Image (cartoon, rainbow, N blue to C red):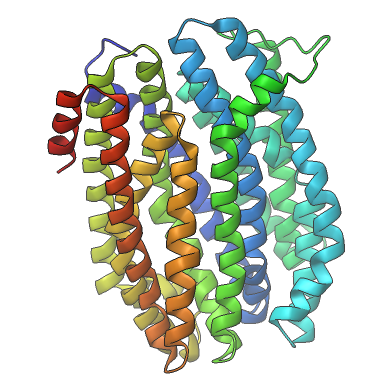
Length: 451
């Protein structure tokens, strides 16, 4: 972690995460592909619920990111006992997060669907889907927490296997339960939900077993566990901003649907398809960020500031290359991206300009993601929170509301404008942070490397 060449090490750390997250993204896309074969209304129901999935992931990833960062920094400082205690906290906190969504998901589903659709079929499918994926989401929380602990200890391969297991199980079970293969009843949208939670529960159970029984770096014995306020504060000092950041994403997604709904409910379907495809683009970038996070945190704990800067520089180059390629694909082949989702003429008419316009944000967003991972690795999660609020609350939504006075095609420009503003703000915050944490002459060098 402190001696190996940075580029090969970062690739080795992030490679499994990139692979597993691509598999997970593929599951998200394939899930919608199967549902779209049922009907456009079924796809719309799943699209409406997509921000709810974001909220669950927000609580899971937010808490686990705080645990990941704290564990990595404590291991870098050779404090194994505190690192182990933090990891045990994560196991319990994942259960608490699940209970929140059991209650909220079951009782809020009807009101949420009434807000976004007047179609009885879409309403019924959406309520069923949301209740299943929230009430039975324990596997999601277990799986994400375990993966983050594996990553914090440098065991990226095990994290890859666990994430890939859940995604592949879901892909296999989706058509069986949706269309009723092998003599089973065709469950439609409910089948997609059952396949999702069943895969998550299996992968989550295996992940927790490996974490509790096979973990070698940390002591995961839960006997006599009690919450420690100091550890909780340290976890949520980084984790809470990450949680709020992704929660805002979910809420903003819902608000964005209310902005585009007056033009047509089909616009919600198009936006839902875009979000699934966007996850396929962004997941590799998040995977590189997952590789950066423990590597930067460990070296920061070991006071190897030169390697912290090198990891960030190489990470920025990698994510920019990925996002540049994705931009070209969305600009020149939007019709090919829509076709597998059984796109109707209305979906093509709305989706082609939407895909081309929104994808202008990709490079800006990739740079911002790399910098926010740097903030989290250095224990400055509030910087990530500020960037998210600045981007979504102060730029994205106001610009989208403004353009809604004219035409649907203009609304999509809000993404490029907001991501450009967020990137510029993230760069400014990084420069200031580097000057605070590094010697003055190194701070100047950090600015030069970022440029």
